[in-house]
Image 1: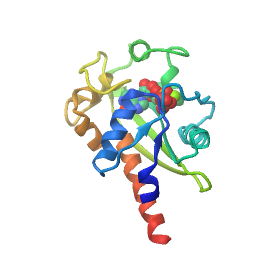
Image 2: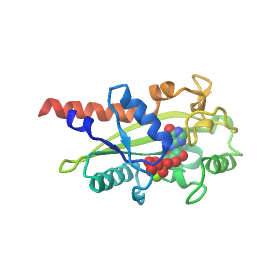
Image 3: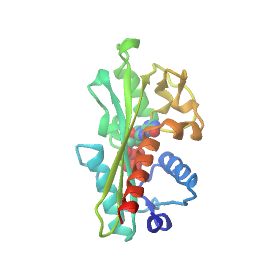
Length: 202
Ligand SMILES: O=P(O)(O)OP(=O)(O)OP(=O)(O)OC[C@H]1O[C@@H](n2cnc3c(O)ncnc32)[C@H](O)[C@@H]1O
Ligand SMILES: [Mg+2]
């Protein structure tokens, strides 16, 4: 764990993820730098979140010669048979903005009734370390898709994602509150558990 803690790269250019993951590690006393925006782009051509997370983490670990942690995540909407899923970032097109993706989601769900708007966020976190086997961990968060966005926090589909038990969207939570329940924080917690287990075995 200590070896990783001193040198770990966040293999993501998504500033929303960077904030959440840095906040998560800050609570453990770790400072984690993200790859520069000029780092090479990784082609996300795998069929699963895990496949893409492993690819992003391993390519960056190789490029920077240090341990790298990547997140591949997305939204699975039941009424859309799990779409946009691994295509969540490019749902409305190759370089679609969050707003364009949210508009497309609203349009596609326009005729879907309240009771059928269930969805979940999924996160796969991969940790690649030079010369060691890559670790993968998962987290999910269940919710509902609203017909209109609410809130200004978070990123991506957060304004449309309602937590029914709180009557709040993810965009209406503070970063502490989101990290207390999110798919990404669950996957990161599970990754830390895997590292602790490795430590105990060595
Ligand atoms: O690949 P990197 O560089 O990490 O950044 P990205 O934005 O392309 O990230 P993904 O390929 O994993 O695509 C995930 C998309 O799913 C959405 N998403 C993932 N986690 C989310 C969250 O916590 N809240 C809202 N939307 C989220 C968001 O729109 C992302 O663009
Ligand atoms: Mg991506």
